[in-house]
Length: 479
Image 1 (cartoon, helix red, strand yellow):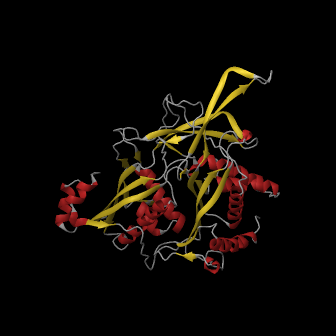
Image 2: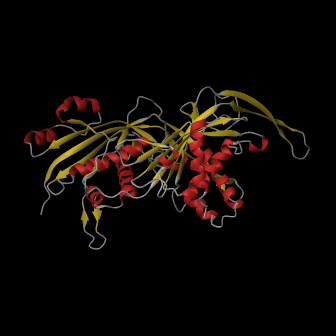
Image 3: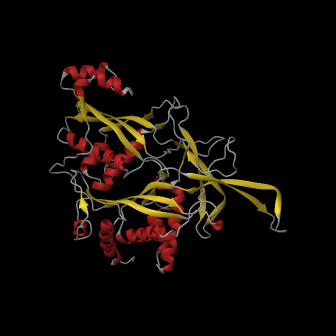
């Protein structure tokens, strides 16, 4: 029997990047090893296939591969090999900006895990889209005579990935564990068209509902306009059961206690040989510069404790070629004024012990400054939380260095947790216990998560609550 299309919901949205973004095209040029993907007109895009994969993957993580998700995104029966068409279509999200240059080049290096040093000849770089860039996208959900009972459940399903994108719980594109691909949802509205109404059907055929000029389309079709409130999600009686899973989001600061240098690209107008890294003309600490030292410290802690499965444990937590990282480290940006200073150096001749001729070089370092960033840990167990809390203790005690020149005293930092937020699905936070027992307050948001938030962690009141929380974690062994 033929399927009859009875209507469509068209969702218009804007995504504003909170961090740089890289979605590779598979191409390279003289400037970089990995170019960002563009459409035939040369516009930077987030492909519809990327958005579709993110939305489906996020929903399956929460609900499993349920009937509703199969019907919405399409499915292939493994036994009969019969396929069902998708009821949702994602257009490419296209960048809309007046800037002439929307990208920069982000450097990377491969670390030798055995020697904790850089691999020879393993430097690489990639093109990234600047943070604060805005992408505009369009999603279409199709209503048919067969899915009319589920049609508005599809609306609620689509809201959930929008909510998670806005909260920073999921990322877009490559290198997400190093902090790329975070965005906020700046605008989200819909048009609902009922094809059983001849006027609706006629207007859909004659007008361009897929115009990326959102203001124009709003003005021309006010009668169909509805807001998509992704902050509030209504559950139906037969909604799929949530899986037992939780996510931890840590907002933290890093303050320099010794000079800090993370090398960036040298440009012709710079007066120094080694310049602190910038993106869109702003100093920052890349997420990768935090991930490396924290991973190394995690390996050291587990080896010191004699943890027998430390290699597999680290791979599962921080990722490898065999699987994605559970931890995402986002770029840190300045909080307040940064004090910079130039340092001059001479290169030493190792044979004579004297200075080499024409070997003077200089560095521009930050010797006083504070940066703020965040870390998100997903699908975690208590032994992983315990390990991360131990690492943050070492950061607080100024026992971890980052960046260039550690051997000559650079890179000493102090890390402090500003805000600890736990997102939990429909089961209690800690087995049969609840974090409210420790005076942590839950939000009353009507959503898929119970949200527990601890603010000003190092203040006197929060410290007492946090000590109780750590004591509970301490009772759980790594093994």
